[in-house]
Length: 369
Length: 187
Image (cartoon, rainbow over all chains, first blue to last red; front, side, top):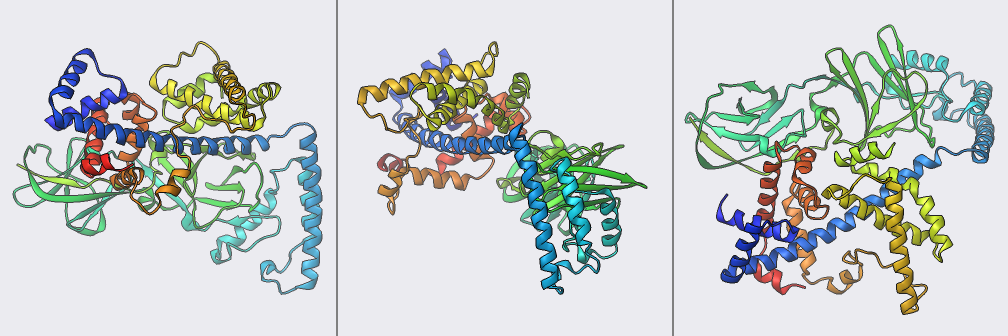
């Protein structure tokens, strides 16, 4: 550790209250005899105080969010009289919606929203009210689900069309699949390396080196991978392992980490649909038939920010739904509507793959032999 | 979620599991209401109690002998009684709750210093330039005082030692962006 870092180390421990006896003596001595050290202590005090204040405000804001989340979940599990009230009002809502549909249809036969040749208005009203009587989050009828599936597989451009009481299709390009472990891929333009596949790599795990011939290598977890200039994504290629660093160059290279999106492919055997309902407890379930997996999500999805992912690891497959920054883990054994469960993105290695794209601090390039 | 599961998740860095603690809010609400307070008072003391609990837990100062609910309730009671005393003393029964942590932004200062360079803004700008993960790392270590072992796991560093090194480097980079004179001058 150089002198400056040593001083920072001492000041940090002092402000944290974690100096040991030796360090405390050292600290006192420096404070008395070193004017610059004294100045630095004053500065760091101010900086730390601001960081603490800021973090305190941020933390309180997050707590308020957690409380809202808690309330949302709790509101969704009403008991006794509230449950009855909700069921009764849902039945009423279903009937009113039905009436609205009939009226709408009579007045505007050309309404593009209901382009379907045979909208079965009366059926829908019946079905809805029966299902709502049973339980709220179960407006999906398996029969309808299958009809809809067959219907939309052939023409995806119709996917935003509202099928009454049925399902909207998630466009095929939003249902992605990934093989795990992921082969990292890269592009390199001389000044920036984009690394695709794992946004959770820590900056300290990466180093960029160059040999005397001018070839670049990326050192990751003590292995060297050769890096060529390329605009098309290339998988990382393992190079020889025995390099030793000679000296730093003046060169600096930026590394940008990109999520799994770019290394994923469109899934061939998974289809996903959603109901568009804004229910209090969004649910999901899977149907499996002839090697085809059909995922049904009972909530509204904003297509711009929603994607379904399946990650294959050996014979195991995990499913995730990503909506904006939120990640939900899906259990493919679930065949009855089950509440969507959010997982924290830092929970484990797999969930970390869904982290936001990151830009690492610029890396100094080192010469190796 | 049981107490044990909550503690495990929180220690793993899954901060959002704090939301499960709000199941104990009702109990605090009814107690505060019996003691001359209202729902908002209860919510405020409860927030403070969560902060105390979480900070202690992350610092390794939380002993899980009692239930989390008992622990939180204890802090809430103490805080609310202090608060009541203070209100009685100053005869300001309608005064807003003064948080335990009075160092936070109050919004007024921003009014006064608008247009001028303020110390807050100066440091904030430097912090923003620093970017992630440094910003998050500093907030977590300085405010929550997490142990380096936990930091290493949360931020994916290979060891507590390298997490510590990374923190020091972040501080150094932050410091390098600022001038001594300005920091001392600015209010």
